[in-house]
Length: 205
Length: 197
Image (cartoon, rainbow over all chains, first blue to last red; front, top):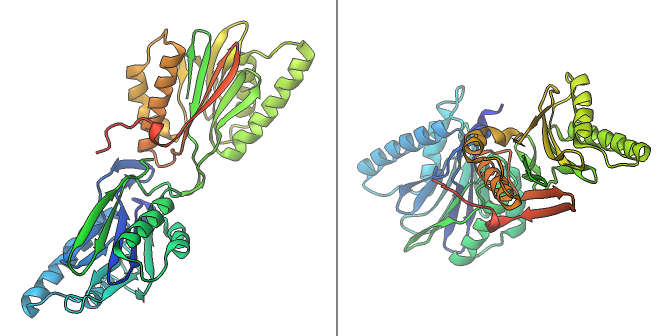
């Protein structure tokens, strides 16, 4: 029994033209049993900043709360919104503090710079090693399946609608090959002026 | 799962095979023919159940040549039982043997892990079955028609597929009567949906 696949779950983020998208499945399960189908793994950390936290569900909740705490204090002190790149370092620091007893989470960050609206995505491992890419990042129990889908479907400079379609197909077809992921999906498209949240119609098996 | 009705049986299964959490086959056929009018539902280790059903199928074919008659369902069930019990320490096989014969009509035999064999009006098996014991016990009644049995199997499998991670894909049905075997597949939006939270 692997701790990272005890609850199951996945998150993808993709880079588009002046936009980013992030999507997750909605299953909460205990090993093979599905307990609920409305457990989102993406949390809003700022008007244009989102973090996905797939992995052990208890740590998903705890890390989301602790990150929000640190972000709130930063905002109060600095009186400005946090940049995505800085947020990545906050996540990295929080995870590395638990280097020898880690949170079982492999986060994904997606957002736009608050001032310049430059798109940003990155992922981290469970002890905080950051990886910034300019195409896509994946994390979760179906990560290998998601890598395959993203490598095939992604192309640079996709507009918001095409990006949403691409990330949805990549996520849904990947989780359909994983026994502990799926049961619903939610996608976020983050643009300079708006955030679109859509619940996807997915297989419920 | 298999259900008996007057004139035959309805057998059904999901279509998911997993290695760990990877879905190796999402369109598996778990309903295996062992004789013209006898099918078995396989659960547990795919290798074990395929090997056992191949051997039982061979024995039944040989018997049919010797007796010049189609084999009885209880014969097939006992052959399954013989193998599953003798090699119980080495096998991981849960089998439901169901079919129609001229002598006793439609019959369902359950051969769970360990190798016992018991005839039942209906039987459920596999990892997803644990989620539907309450449902099947509350809905089943004797004297159902073929259509009612099909609906019963479809609904039960749909509920199990919804809750169990190791179950999913499509619903495969086989209706075995004196007329022969009719196979059906229920895919996508045709699979019944219930409360989804």
